[in-house]
Length: 360
Length: 276
Image (cartoon, rainbow over all chains, first blue to last red; front, side, top):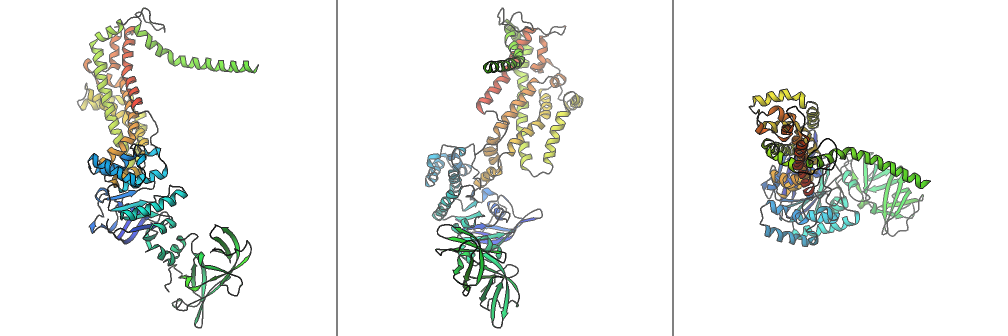
């Protein structure tokens, strides 16, 4: 258990800034997800934490101890790799016990601790097998077992679920969450899967181009995305982003685009001039179907209808722009219909021309 | 009609296969039979009269026995250990370090070592070994063979080392291993099949090498079996077939034993990497 501090950490590979001035704190026992598309620097950040890379500048501390340039073995971390990296020439038991072995633990303690961990992870019947002889899910658990066996201070995950099939992934996800809570270990988890990050994290750090663009609890990041990038990255389907023009008319403010016209609190738009280009953001679940054009904020023609069981996704074209609505229980419109939607203002987000969220 | 054609096709195939097999097998069969034949000549025939006396005479030749069971073993074994060790370390370094042009380097080494070899390199090699004061020493022979075989050995080893995912080593490091511990616990066991390939290949090359020890060694007590076999020639320069074959048979046994041992213990694989 430990508190982790990243203090203005950068890592350059030649001219590439893989990690660019990243600062954050991880509280003791907290589960942090680094979320972002490939190449955003999240894995490099994790490797900096593990000691597999050394930062170009900045400082990393664990429990107030500076570990910026410490070797991996001096850091007391456990790590689960994307490909699990189980040693193919060792049995499962030897794999799990390896961190204890290199720390010089007596063979008897090693065996006891290995058996303990294997049992709690449900892989105790596999101890004599080799990694090639067990399934992907079992390999993943073995890899987790090896990472926790020496009770590390910080637990690191590099996309540990990406090699599992969809069903197993959800199962393994809840298992990891449960395990982390049970162990109470500080965890840093890298993923490009927003659902995984939402489900697991106490806080999510969304990364783009080597920088942390937003960090906060999952629902906060989901509800108040700091930029259009975050808005577009979180949620499936992501937030609808529609370019609009601001119309200031007397004391009133309206956002307009072809097929769309919505009034907003003038206070929100106060710092912009009439005719400013803004981006309107709205989550698919916040589009309400209304029967006629009178109540509607926008109108579009139905492009696809995707029934998913509990919900139906309706995608409409509005002046060449695709807007997706998530409907629960409503009688969905059919392909080619004209559909009228209403957006309540408190569900509506505004982004300026740089893509930064406008605070209410 | 169809049956006849089938039979004929098959018969032709087997006949052709038998001829090819015989081409390879006959010299080996001859090597197996001739040593036990009191009146062996170049013909392949069952030993008649059967005798072990040829081996008796071979073992009476102290020079040849020492060459085979001491000098050849020292030279081939020494080069084998040296080449395997150096090739593994070099291949590992070449594979893992960010040296620019490392591929060019290993290709270049292989190219030169295969072009500049044997006779062409012998004069400078002789001068080099002479100025090092290693003429007529086993070490000189071992070093020359090691130098000659290393590039290709490194090349073979690199294939094995390159196939180890980096994450294996990284996961060992994060688990708390030192750099040496990681190499010893993870990399070495995984590339062991490659080391075995290189070891056997080196051993066989040195074991059969004639020219290098012939030029670099002087005293009979240092000669390996490949040179000592000429002690079973008459003064006129013709081989005494009974004795050369008996000696040759003994000469093949260590290589055969080594091959069988390695194959039994580790198995041969030319392409590295363990699929997990």
